Image (cartoon, rainbow, N blue to C red; front, side, top):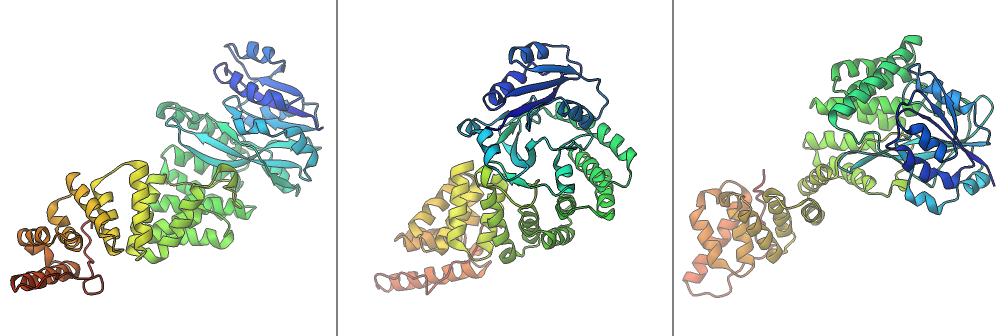
Length: 460
């Protein structure tokens, strides 16, 4: 079996450290903890878990502290965690020592699940378990890692079968702001040492973006791109942040341009596909947007261990927002069955709104599911959708469900609304024909989907 050292740097982590060490202890043969100035019970907890404890004077550079700790480990494999992290409970079913023995790689790329206060999370990937190779070192004053070193020397990195949970961003806005400012200070020091480092410019831009300093972030990102990133992955990550910035500024043509550039560099990714789909949707190019948004939605619903692409950092859109635009794109692209399913999924997952239920009803109506459409449209009315907007499709649903008198009453009350689009006009013609036939004593005067097509949309 391979022997593994847990390698950590800590400061005042008595709140988080027990959870971290408890999750890792079954998998490691040595715990090395470097303390940078704790004044709480952190060291007592570390002693309790049998850690080897060392001290290091904080310099503002995370890699310096990490490399000091790395030099102290004695085992051939290194697992590194922060105190506010833990190995996910699923890792208990995996023998990390055995994973290290059987791999032909030098490191494992691990999904990091970054939790927020509300329990939601985003995922990025980073090397967290690696061989202690000669000369290997952490790089980066903040957001540090050994990834760059491994890439520079062509070392093989393989996917991990375990997950790390990270709680360091489950903070209040004020706490998160302070943490990002601390990171920014370290990153600017690193940038001062090498002003032509595109990675440092990207990390500064990324952090400024998180702080809401969009104009300054944009300058850093453009500088990073102009300095010719050393890898296609970094190039795409810069382009993707530029695409996000353009999208938030409602510059959808620029969003599209950056997204297409990124996809041209690396097609196996989710982020550029997502932003391309959103930009096309915003331009009302629904048929082009729909397949892209559907792929992005499906990617976001994959289990964490299956969300693997060529990028280490993928962006995600909140599921409720993405599902809503996906459903509308499907509707506008003519994918009525799928649109009805998406609106139903939204309703079942995120709750009812008058507009969502009206859209579900309209798409059911187009599919010929008249009773279901009627139920949805009537429910939308009770939730506040104006009857004037619902009248034409509701009348058509009533008629096709065998309630022509009620449909006729709606037509009489909201007659003007029926003549504002072709669908309402067709429904009016259907009702007028029925009225004429029923007045002459002819029974069974019902239209069919082939005779009359209801195409009004009460939700625009």
